[in-house]
Length: 236
Ligand SMILES: [Zn+2]
Image 1: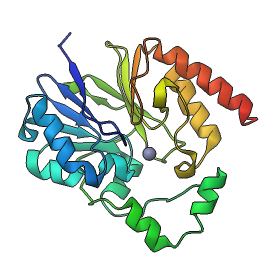
Image 2: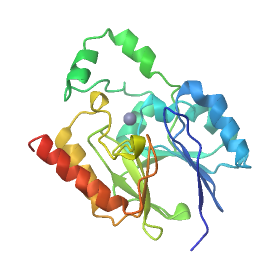
Image 3: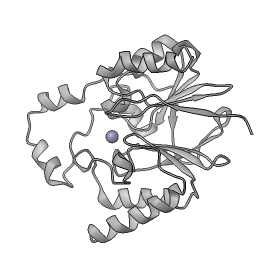
């Protein structure tokens, strides 16, 4: 099995993961404001952005796509994202905005659209590899799982042999406490729980979230417990 070194190149707002190996790749690209810090973190890990072969996007939110266009220009890397989110990333469909499944989301929905647009803004970027369930990125050894509930086209990147996955916002782990994605920007509680149950079935040792610390060892078990707690709390 090929060696794989995963470096967290995050900011307090969000994580990105730089994966070194024969075909180096980056998972997510943080907020537009974090560009400089992200570039510095990449060079601190002794890599140049030009060496990136792929940029894998877990979902279209601006704190994951903030530097996507710039990094693609710098690196010529191929950009991958779930096919439904790819339309938003490419600017062909507007972001869904706040959802109506939480009080905070319902409040945010009453804000003027222009304010929300400004807040969520990122530079559009063409997606080279629109992904769907069951696809495999052979060169990277990653399988694609569709994980709806937070955004419609959210995906996880699953490395079966290494028993790890990059899971985007589907489970956060802020202060080392597994929790749901930000509900104000999610759209379906039942889909969230179902997506978590899928992750729970994968026998993951480690899960790499968009927010908070790496989950694990025993990531799938932890996520399974969270899914059942939420299912009870949300009366699903
Ligand atoms: Zn998100």
